[in-house]
Each structure stands twice: as structure tokens, then as C-alpha cells.
Image (cartoon, rainbow, N blue to C red; front, side, top):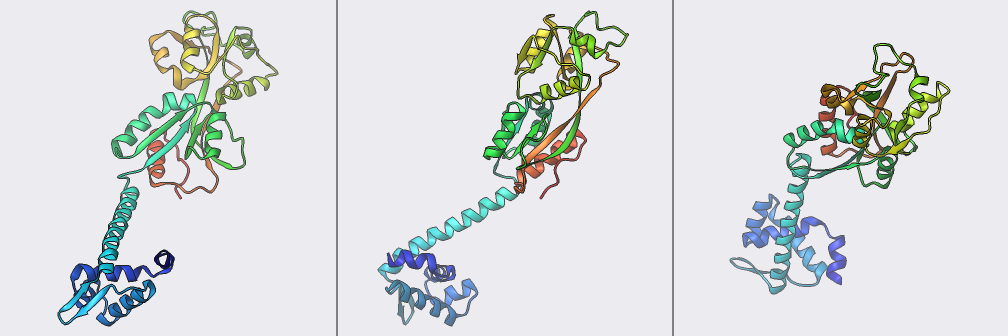
Length: 310
């Protein structure tokens, strides 16, 4: 108990100098290795012995020899120095992105269609960093941020908590889509009221995309009752392509379908929806080195400036 009490109170130099002497086999050589004067080393080892209440070194005519207690302490001192060196090396690797973990969350559109290229580039540059990606709707991602399970959230919806801070990193466009050869896919531009008369497929409650669509329609005095509400952008595209209804979705998710012709964009003369995509973090939380680099890759890929490092 005396040692434990002393351990938490003692100057770490006592143990470091004792370790140097034990390794060198004499106080003079230990002092030289530690670059400390011999009298100073002798004084601190004497203080260590007094604090522990046991002799650690027998001072002999030809140097010094560890006592049995000294051998016990030397063994632990050696382990302590090893742990200290390992800790310093681990921090150095962490700062140099040779180890570490980054947990981020993204809403479905961002996670499924915008982030894959960003993640691939980040992994190419920093293969030792373990990247964990949680994909869910905006409401869920913001909850994960507040619970501390992720360090960064990328969402389509606005802030819902004063504990979070947000920065726009990309401008997305929402477009009305219909199956190939749908009557509304004409050069003549349709109106919002016309598309609202069609069977409508929406994202689920809590989705950032749905919130933006409903807000845009309310500005026109319109409210729609969806035929279906789904959490999967892929399912929505497939149902629209099958002729079940129309939908308003991010242009990001229909690139391939527009190229193949399975879906088309309905030209609208009185509705244009652009929405910001947000980087969200807990206010005041510091950024890990991995997050700083991830934001740099995201900035290069998206063409927008992410949250400032700090």
C-alpha cells in the first residue's frame, strides 16, 4: 500500500533515473546515460529508497548492485519504460494516420451515391485508418451524433438540435422522375399541380428528402398523400420505372437510369428544388486527424469547402 500511494505521488524522474542506473550497472554510467549529474542521481535514488522504505542498491567499491527489492522494481521500471515508449509510438502513429478509426454517418442519398468515390479515395490515401459508415435517414444520423457514436454526419435535412453545428458542402438538385414514355415526359413543361395529381411515391417520415419536397410543395399551396412511403431510394426508382407512380428524388441517384432511358425527368415550369447537403458535428468537439483528412478528400471531390479544421 505504501508503494501504491507513493507511485501516484512520486516524480517520474525517480523511476526513470533508477531504470537508467539499473540498466548501466553503476550510478556514474547511469547518470551519463541520463545526462544528469552523478550527485543528482544519487540524491533522487536515495529519495526513492526513503519513500519506499527499502534499499534498492548496494553501493560497492566497484559500482553498485541491485538488491532483491531493486531487482523487483527494475523489472517493473523496464516494463513502464516499454509501455511509455509504446504509448508515444501509438500517438505518433495516430497523428500520422498510421492507425485510428473514423466513424461517420450519412443519409441514404449521400451515403449511397455521393460518398462511395470519396471513401475509395480516402482509403487509397490512408489504408491503415478503419472507416465506419452508418447509413440512415437524417433524423437517425443526428441522433447518432448527439449520442457520440459517430464523429461526422452528412445529411440532407436541416439541423434539429442546438447542440449541433452545420456547414453546407454540396448543392443538390431534386427532380421529378417518371417511367419511360410517361405522358408528362414531353418538351412542354408541366406544372406542380399536374404532377401532384399523379400517384406519388415519397421517402419515409424522417427523411431529409421528404422534408424538402413537402416544404417545396407547401409553398405552392399543395399537399400530397403518397401512394407509398419508402426508405429505399433504389426501391423508389424501381417502382417508378415499373409504372407504379412518379417521385421527386435527388438527381444524384438517377444518373444511370437517365443514361439507359428507363427513367426520365419531368420538365417543370414552376418548380425548381435545390437543397444544401450538410456536414453536421457536435458543437465544440475537436476534429481527429483522420476527420481532417476525410474532409479534405470530400472537399476535393465535391468542389465545396467543408467544415474548417480545428
